[in-house]
Image 1 (cartoon, rainbow, N blue to C red):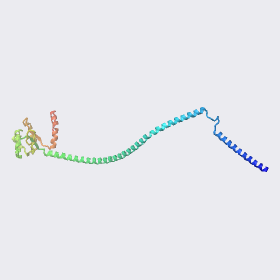
Image 2: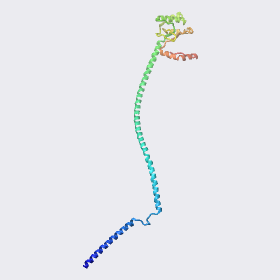
Image 3: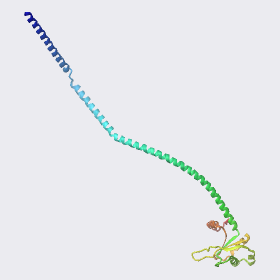
Length: 274
C-alpha cells in the first residue's frame, strides 16, 4: 500500500514538472516574440534621420509633380498629334490623287503632242498646196493681165441706154477726136477688136455715172498712142483713162497709188509695173 501511494506521488510529481516545463517554454517563446517585434532604444531613428527622410520624400514629391506636369503636357499634345496624323493621311491621299491626275495629264500631253505633230504635218502639206494654189493663181492673174494688155478703159464718156457695141465704138471715136484731139487720119489707123460698155453702171451719192467703156485695140502701139494724148484732155474735166486689169490687181494699185503720187511729187521716177 505505501508503495502504491509512493508511485502515484512520483507520477504526479513528473506531471507537475512536465507542466512547469511547458509553461516555462511558452513564457520564453512569448518573451522572444516580444523581443523580436520591439526595438531597443538604440535602434530608434534620431531627428536628423527623420528630417533626411522627410527631405527625400519632399524631393520625390517634387519630382513626381514635375513628371506629372510633363506627362500632362505630353498628353495635351495627343489631340494635335491625332490631327497631324489625320492631315498627313489627307495629304497622302491628295498626293495620290495628284499623281494620278499628273499621269492622266501626261497621257493627254502625249496625245496632244501626237495630234500636234500630225496637224503640223498636215499644215505643212496644206501650206505647200496653198503655195501651189497661190502660184497658180498668180500665173492665172498674170496671164489675164497679159490677155488684157491691149485693153484700155475710158470713164465718164456720155452713155446712151440700149447702146450697141457699134454705137459705143462710134461714140468712142468721136471722144478721141474731140476731147483728145486725135486727127481723122490717125483714127483711121487705129483698129479696135472690140468696144463695149461695162454692164454695171457705177453710182454715186449725187447722180448716176456713165458706164465705163472698154476698148481692145489690135496693136499695143495704138494703145500707147492713145495714152500719149491724155495731156490734151480739157482741164477740170471728169474724163479718165486707165489700163484694164483684173479686180485684184486694181485693188493693189489703188492701195499703192498714194505712194506713187508722193514719189512723183518728190520728183522721183515712179511707175506701176503691172
